[in-house]
Length: 298
Image 1 (cartoon, one colour):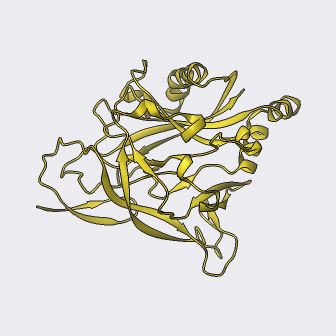
Image 2 (cartoon, rainbow, N blue to C red):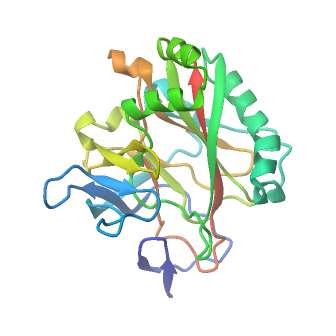
């Protein structure tokens, strides 16, 4: 039967014969939205909030491509942060419940300590963790933050150093930490007890991404300007996803690594995006997730 599914960026018509409890697994082919340069050749920018009256929300373009996306389920332990810039963790204990994520205060008081402990125990060399924000995404029309359907990297190297200075308020300590290894890692997990069924997260192994595929974009806040990176399509990129992620699984996404700036084979970042799997059945659960962003020192 023909079905019409609304995402945050477009309406896609798909055909499926599966029941509403079906969880898509295995390799798939789906559309991913990639970066395209501003038509006038200007530096790309995006306003986080409402732009000034004479400015668009963003000045760059987008293009969609059909991409093969492979499922890492069953092979998830083959990947790590240094090699691929992503890593999986399973059977993670938690004291959170679904209602924990209705309150930012509860998230900080209950979930943040779990994330800090998890990162210290899971990332070799980690000595200090600074959690600096989180985003809860719900694929519902009235949700303030929805899944991002655009391939991107959260930080440039300059923006990562700025984050250290912004969130480590003692300037002397910040400069000392900047002299050592520092990373930015996002910790991604679903909120619901049931596995993720729709709008999963796709990510491209850092080993398959050329530095020329990434374009710095001014990320304009009301009181400062950061930088993210858009991702240009390259058929050599190897896109993956982790099917049916459950509440006790965590996906670590590395957004920056100062060690990678020195050259060598340490991955710096992983492009990622939500995508709509054409196998998603009618009546699928809408994806609900949280990502916590962390500075990892050491």
